Image (tube, rainbow, N blue to C red; front, side, top):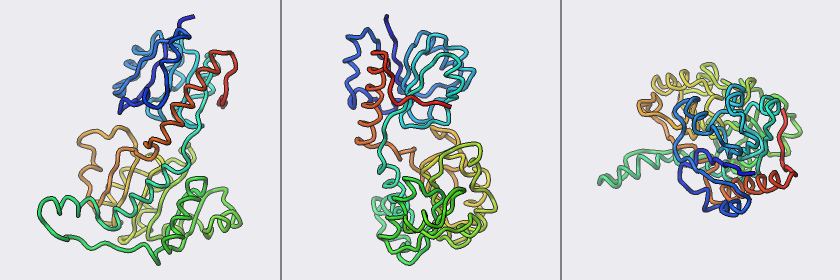
Length: 319
């Protein structure tokens, strides 16, 4: 049987450099990479009309029930990582589509979190631009030592960030719905309520998985508690934060600033209010974009496809 494989959202055109997809040609697979995001659901369905296998990059392209209903040829959907809130896994199963995940880097996102925090604390983007323009020292930053780091979501990523905070001499507090005091202590943090976290934190950083329950975890109330000296860092998912409230917080000075790697809609469009908001450090969802992470993502996806073609799917995801 001939198969068509679509690799979605390969923005940098690097998928083939991190996995040997040409090896699939011997199995009768035609491989197509898409560098640009689809502008509409209809455009997605049209492009994938005869596609039997898809690799989806994180949550870039949504696969709700309506998409599965319009793609009768689709048989295998591989998502990078082992969870993807943009895929209706139950609907996929109902339409006979196998959904698989891949390994991922445990260090890429925590390292970027810390890079953003250091950069916004010391105004590095502004100082670099200023230096190139001929100005020597134009801002005054602040030190992390002695400050309080508030971590919302103390999972695999949050625990690494907690360790970084300890290494920098910060007091670490954490909050999460199912977090226990013992688990927080093991990670080097002190368990507090969400309200206390945003009250005492100099820096609040988000590391929750996106779900209907976690959406808008941070809204006006939390931002006002964070206060005019507080920094918000989000490298998890954009919808964890009420975007309208965040824009107001930045423009009206409720908080000191925000370092953001994720947004409600990605890629971020021209004219987006966050692009004009003051005291922001913005990056284009680079949390997972490392050589090591891509080797695991694309290499794992190739393993999944090979196993599925052999009739023995691996790393399958269920609702």
